[in-house]
Length: 398
Image (tube, rainbow, N blue to C red; front, side, top):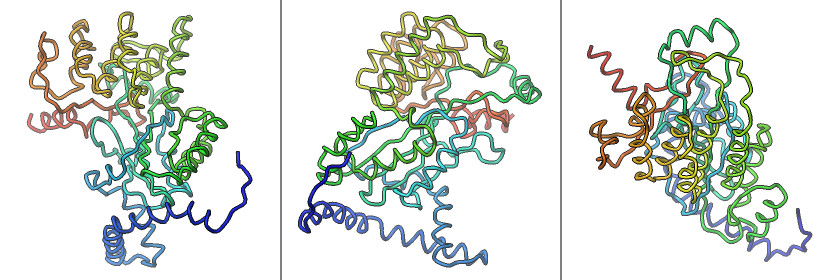
């Protein structure tokens, strides 16, 4: 992995100069905001008569990152970006705890969203179409890591009898596992030496079978590998090529007989386990989220013989990829029923019929309904979505 070289002072200076330069820019851009956060944390601890040493203040700043607003996050600071899949998780908060403790990242994140779908009093704050976002920064290269928990990848329809659905699993004491996908978007500055000249990252890709761009800074590469290795999720660390291969494996598995499921399933009480077809519907969305340039062709290839969950996944994938005409085609060709009704709820629109008319009239903003099918608290996570807010207003008004 490493090549023996004879170092000189001038060579070391050239290698480290780029890190020093980006650190100086980072200080100019963010020092004032950091001081403001520091003073706010110090004032809060003093008002609550809690220990207020420098270490206590920094720890509180890290905790208080969950109250930072997404609109103030430096989301467009650098020009380069790449997306990776970090696996599916029953409890995404466990993975985020590994990210919190990664030594290659600042211990005070720009933004931290607690995503524990099982906690009674911890509904995550949703930004955009069902996405819970946390934002971290690498110590040396100042690369940004947007860790995004996708709460809207579900392809099952919700239970028609939510109470029976909840009590069934509560009484059985056999809790089904959720499959909540987590992604990371790496955003890094233009550089020549922070990536080891490109050769280092290419050797890293060959050795670990990863898909990093050749100019990603080395500390961002090590941070992601460290997190996934520690979380024992390294086989699930995928880019576009890896996700294509996994989707192909699922398509091959769909040709085999489906094994018997542990749980029963009806329209009133759907099965929380996932069939192969439902897994395909979810992985099509993952491929779109990773930015596959051929996602439209993949959707069009799957559609002719697709089952209902795959069609739902294709509709969501088309929205993620910005293929609005393809999305309209999927919705308008969907047979009337609950699946089509829920597809029409994936976007903001003037009227429901706009998605079914021959010439749909959609607003530019799009919105997905967000909710894993099942949580241990027995409720869908939708109070932060447009659909949930409208429903809540209707109940209050009624």
